[in-house]
Length: 483
Ligand SMILES: *Cc1c(COP(=O)(O)O)cnc(C)c1O
Image (cartoon, rainbow, N blue to C red; front, side, top):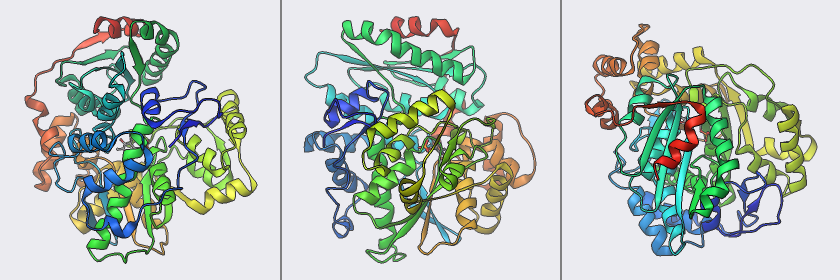
């Protein structure tokens, strides 16, 4: 498949190049007009496992990697580094189904993509005279998942920066204890926006300098096609699991409700639909930062509003980057239009879509939002009624799912282990407050008699390996020092 920017067709490249580059030089995201030309035969997936389906999906979307490269990447990414043999099991909760995406090494769904992206990058680097330096700013979850994915991958080094004192106790420990010869982590004095702006500026000013010394600067964030493609896999695999459980007839439609931030996870569901999966509704679930709910209802995307800090930090986003890809597809590839909308978003913080394009968007996506109180209520209900522990992000999606009428079976994407957000989950269930992430994890585990995942429970015994605290203007030097 050939890829080009959402904002122009001037440069075309193949998937290997797109995976290394991440973002297009004009600021657009890489898309392919061939999406949907090749459909997967659903019946043929029924006797495959997660890895088999991953191979079929990635062979379509990343078709210029060799079969051997894909197979080796898949085997390394989806094995006993996931704590469940099904990788992403589907389980029942009341009338709905949960697609559990949190059994990876950092207990959040970002592992599914970040366990394989480094393998793909390493393959794409073969035969090239360059190495890669990944630089990532994180508000918490992405940083740890990226560190775990890239640790000790040959030819690639990674530096992660997070705002000092502003990540949760558990997130801090996850990053500060990270092992690996090629990893560096620093706390930066400033807030997340400061850190992210500094990292973006680093890309703008230092890329050339790094390239001259044979180093490609790249990022591991969710706009990389190498992160999107692996997320398409679990939509197909969830469908297979439900057919095998007898909960779905082969060929019948399935609805998906997705807790959404940057629009990457739900966009993968749209890709699956284009590739032949019988998808009914794709529901965009938002928290109180409901810019997407408003957009899908009215056609007006307006980020000029108060930023609300919620108990679902991974959805606290007002600029949903991957939506740009959806705008491209809904306009059937009108790059000038996408450019104009993105320009308006940059300049005025607002854009509007109308008519047939809005109608087409509404045909594919439903939407809804739930605030902190509703999420806490849903966590309590899940425990009381179904003896299930769910994390706040999952709870937002489940709230939205249960408020709607569905014509098809419903799968709610469950994006994090409840133990990653122990304090809020404990508070929801017991009405009692405990401060300190590790203490809350123990308390939640004791109260519910459910074990925390090993990767979180063992954090208290791991040595702190990264304790640097730096200023904003020291980020570039910190990256260079490590090389
Ligand atoms: C990143 C994340 C999300 C949002 O996913 P997007 O692809 O950004 O829409 C939801 N829940 C959790 C726990 C996450 O880490």
